Structure formats: C-alpha cells, structure tokens
Image (cartoon, rainbow, N blue to C red; front, side):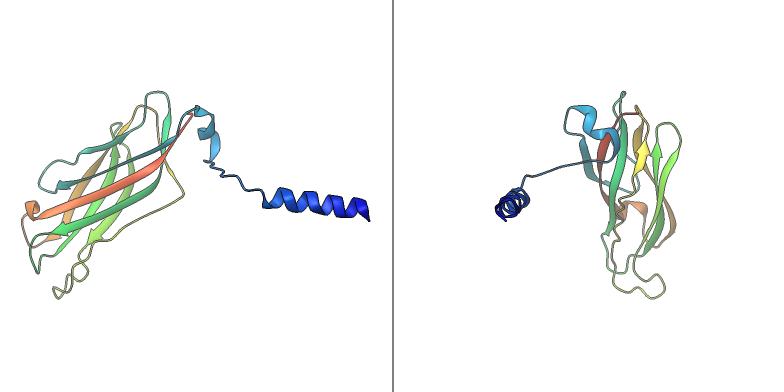
Length: 157
C-alpha cells in the first residue's frame, strides 16, 4: 500500500507541474532560432502589389495564417475581386476571393478574412507578393485599400 501511495503521489506531482511548451511542425524546431515569421500592411489597389514576405535563402517559409480585407472610401461602393499570392518564381501559391457583401443591391459592405492552418510552403529564397484583379467595381481602383497579415514559420528545405 505504501508503494501505491508513493507512486500515486509521484504521478500527481508530475502531472501538476506545468511547463510552457512551444512546438512547430516538422523540422522548424531545429533552426536554433525563433522560426515564427509574420508581415502586415496595406496598399491601394491602383498600384502594383507589394512584396509582403520573403523566405530566407537557406530556409523554406511555411505560411499558416493569411488574413485579408478590403476597405472602401464611399457609401455604396461595391467590388468583387481575386487576390493571388504569387512567388518571385512565378508560382501562384494561393488564390482568394474578396467582395462587398451584396453586389446586387448595395447592401452593407464588409471585408472577408481567410485563415488556414494547413500551411503553404514557400521555397527558400522566394519572395511573395499580392496580385489583385477586379471582377467587378463601381468606383475607380484607387478608392479601394487591401489590408493583409500573413504568418508562418521557417523550416529546413
């Protein structure tokens, strides 16, 4: 009985001792540094899309979170468009649709956000930019501003 009590006490003590643990999928932990990367910004849709984040030359970048929204300047301003995440290698790594809430009747405008946890692997040395194309708009491109935030982690190629 004494052994059982001692074993039970040891198990309870071990389970109640808490330590913060941070883990990232795959080989990211072996980098020896903080592998988390993020970037954010805004740009007016009448300009070329900016470079938003780059993978270092010796590590891949895995994007796990992508948030985007479009702000407008006028009441009744309607839009619909496609946002592509394009690499400096010419590859499209993601495509998303953003639009005002109701194109048919000028209802309340809203931006939409996208987040995923599956990961989009960007090869070492590749920079990512945004490419926007309107499918519908009733105001000039300069009246629209795209806001973005991307995040992920570094991994060994």
